[in-house]
Length: 259
Image (tube, rainbow, N blue to C red; front, side, top):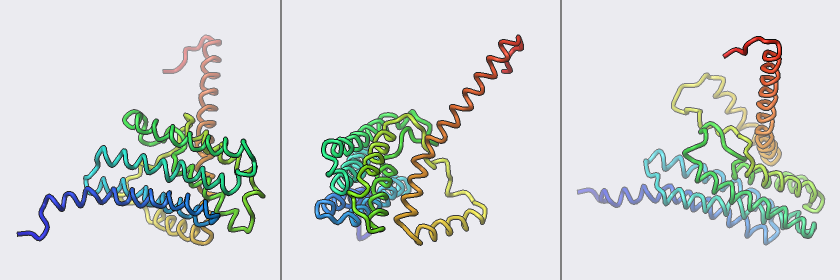
């Protein structure tokens, strides 16, 4: 007779992904507490820790075949705290408070953008292309804001020194989350397939680069990712305009357009 019954083992596996979600929620709450205590570096790092746990809970659920509606809802609520309320409060306490009404309006735009982004993601999960996110993902937006706090603090500056930059970046992150701009999701990468050796070397170099200066490298990476969606949108828009111009030229010359 087994020491632990099959039912209890199944219940334990079911709880496992929710433990990672709880850890992400705790990290987001910890970031808020540290911001209230004016320990902004700890608050920024806690948001990045929340990102790690948030990325693990879904993967653990898929590996153990324990996906559930409860887990999905709990994950969304945790994301709202860790990547919605926490970054907004951290950046407000750190830099936006001195801007008066504009400061809390910018923080609210970010917080509302995160809530709307999560609600739209939950309703469109079976509709949109899996290869892309519609709007900037809330963890990436949170990393963008937290990365600014971390890198500025690490260089010995204060929030009031970069309050206007923080305001613009916060509004940019909030609007990007509710935009229709498509961002690459990376979900088309199959980790079970073999990859060239150069990919392994690139991953090692990436880890070494991040470890060399985490605040600056992480902020630069997420800033580049936030801009990549707009670059992709501009490239597609340019191609579409060129294609339409070519079709008009062919129609005007009497040459039927190609199928």
